Amino acid sequence: MLLKKIIRIFAWTIGSVVVLCGIIFLIAWKSPKYYNVSRTYDPIADSIIPFKYYPSINNHPRPYIIRSNNQYCIFGAQHTRDPENTEIKIIEKEWNDLKPTIALVEGRLGFLLPGLMDPVKTLGEGGKVKALAGKNDIPVYNWDLPKEMLAKQLLKKFTAEQIALAQILNPYFSELRFGKPASPEKFIEEFMYRAKYVGQENNLRTAADIDNAWKKYFPTGPDWKNVNDQEGLPGFLNDMAAFSNDLRNQQLVLVIKELVSKGEKVFAICGSSHAACVATAFNK
View 1 (cartoon, rainbow, N blue to C red):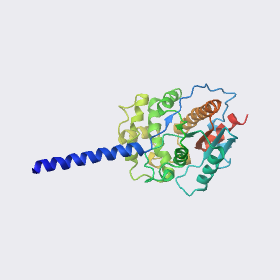
View 2: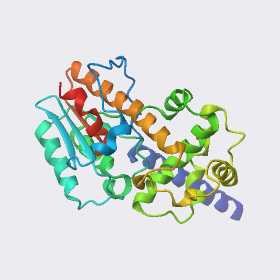
View 3: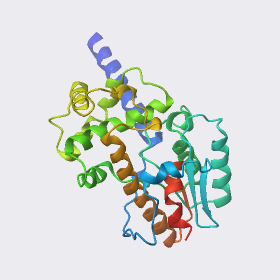
View 4: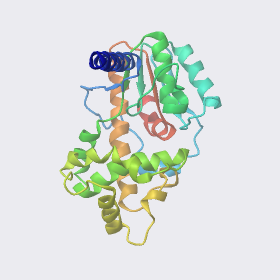
């Protein structure tokens, strides 16, 4: 009798957990899919400002907004996780003015339970756009290049180890804008899989491997745990960031132009530096 009672309790508990997980799966936000662009980059019609020249134009307005009536709004944001930041209100205004039919966000948004977690506090300005799209029931895509595709294109200029090291650590460098994680080593664990994109999965498997590789390229410092991308990146990482941003900015231009050619009204959120660099492709 006791055994049957224990079995019933166990079965009820397992069933409850399964139901709860199912509910979370249904209501939790999913990361937007990458948009697969079919257009080919035209260096004349789609010309961008190379990122290496960005320091000469970084006194641009913030936010940097590129508009076309009834076609698109490219919102170049200062990255924020403050729901009270005035930029969030400006995003709402631009959204309501355009009334978009499709939204583009930068990067793959992470896990969020609507109603329990604040989109901006958790995911930044991209979370705000995702929330607005949800209210209007319109699709959301990631305009960015898939990391695996970007990694393969970077092989034209950098070694596989350099690319893997950068792709694992870049999220951490960006996170430092909002404060240092309690455990830098723990933070980068979820990005270690990126080493496989360039065949480095057996060489970069642990935080200790990252430490050793880092010291090879930066024997006199700085420590990667203190590198903030808002303050610039050291050595080859700076060159790689510029080359990566050029590839990503080309992708941003192609995605928006392709969607507009299909009759979509596009609201795209990106960092202000991206908007400043792609403005030439839309001002012609």
